[in-house]
Image (cartoon, rainbow, N blue to C red):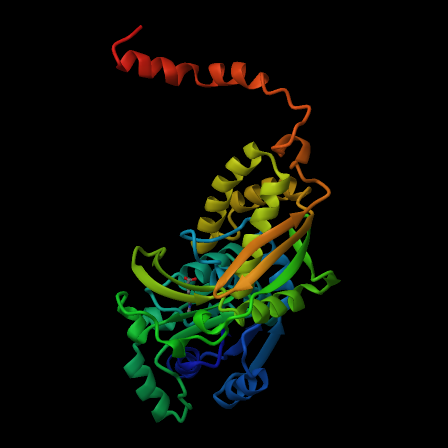
Length: 390
Ligand code: ARG
């Protein structure tokens, strides 16, 4: 078997259980998508508790270029708020697990997801899409494991437990925090749960940054070309120190449960805001209107684990086509939890000063009258009828 292994409580317990109950030979796989973990320590732990082999896969560059960049182009926010950090990383992890399973001749891929969340949906569908012959094992879900039982089992088997009260998932695109007091949706999140952002009320100096985009993708920060991973890391730091990217919202999970979710996503919120502004500058109003529908569907598909669904590729084709002209720079002011766009430039801008100005210009104002009469024709007629007129 190949097991998606984070080194946390669930996957450590599973590693032991799979050997004990199924006599399985387990290969553990940890995919590095930018979480702040000690990967050498994770490997050591896996081998110590019986993994026959361990892989650490550095997928940071692939994650940013193949998963995060399309999300920026799609301005992807599920429920209008969640930048999808966890949801974007799951199909990439599934791909790595499948590659290793095929290479090692493993017939089963195991993960530590519960039966309550979205991650099981994302893992199962992605794995089955890429490797239909494989079995998927989800011991927490199948054997109904709970936290108290797991902690007890871990203690009995000498597995170190350093789990806090919160359930945290982290990658370059964001950090999610669930559990504990956060399960009471009426209580404001305690400051202790935040790790990437300072409290917005504590910062007093505004800071302006400039982000350059080429074909909808961020390529430079303050005029300097930066590599994809570095750019996201840098923006998490810069925007995070202004308290940008804290999200507290109610989410509709794939399985129907409503949950209270806390996220920190400073780079994601800053980049999507800047990118959306640039699009408004260069795309026609018809493209913008239609793209909103595409974006909503794109985020919905990713959230629900349908990364490999043909509709997603179709939407990407539309998005890539219209992003061809999304080049330019956006100036963003970071201040007290806000990332405000305060300036934009583009060689493809559809903004014409000559047209927009209040000063005298060649624009023939008399053209507007015919347009308004025809445009309003039916609405005016309908109102007249409603008033009893003809
Ligand atoms: N609600 C978020 C999502 O569905 C976060 C999930 C966090 N996952 C985790 N295993 N802690 O994408």
